[in-house]
Length: 279
Image 1 (cartoon, helix red, strand yellow):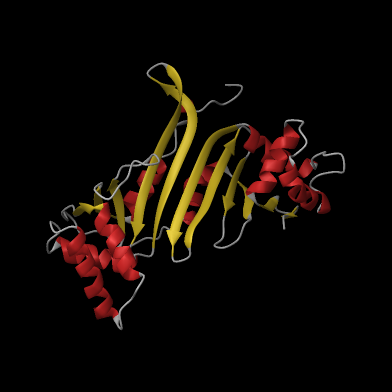
Image 2 (cartoon, rainbow, N blue to C red):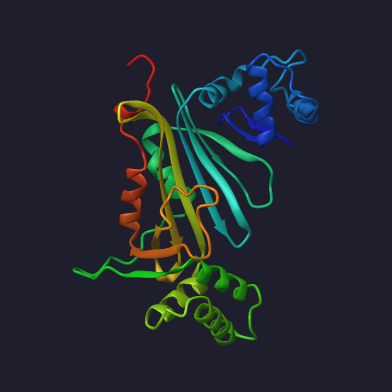
């Protein structure tokens, strides 16, 4: 069920409720499959009997209807993928958080200058150990087939941790014989220690080679708990449907929380890149 908290201008809404608002903003009657959603919104007072929208929705719907910047955050952990995001409108910025197994997301207004902090919160970015001075770059390279095989092996854990690791190691060797120690052992430990994988995608209307175009930037990271953060350099984001297969290269680069923070910051366009009305 949808709900709202007027004291903090926050809302709990599912995609189907957003779809109802879109139809009403366009002066359309929502289709039959959205009638139940419409009734739910009417029941809590966000939509009137004649389809009028509550004034409390003005900032949220203004941002959704005319966004300058859309940010999608997909986090995949123990409970599967969960989607979060941010909508930057002309006059307001709204962040939304999903929850595993629940249909609704919580939409809440935030200040624009907290945007990087908000994205870091969504991916649970924490400070790690300070990197050693002059430490060498560490990269691991294999194929997506190896990762898929490792995940299949993890779905049937062994009698103990050692048995599970041996099962994953065997799966990796069979899927990518070119993966040898020490990289084999290191990749094995990354997979076993994996807390979550996440990616942030930003999109806005801009210009490319003199033509108006949708601009997209993205970042994909593995959060491997005590083994730290690893940026997925290949397959390179953004990934289009059907682009990745078993033979696609998988390259991970060891990183730090500070470096990840900087890369999140780099995902955001500069002010002059955005279409800001009145400027």
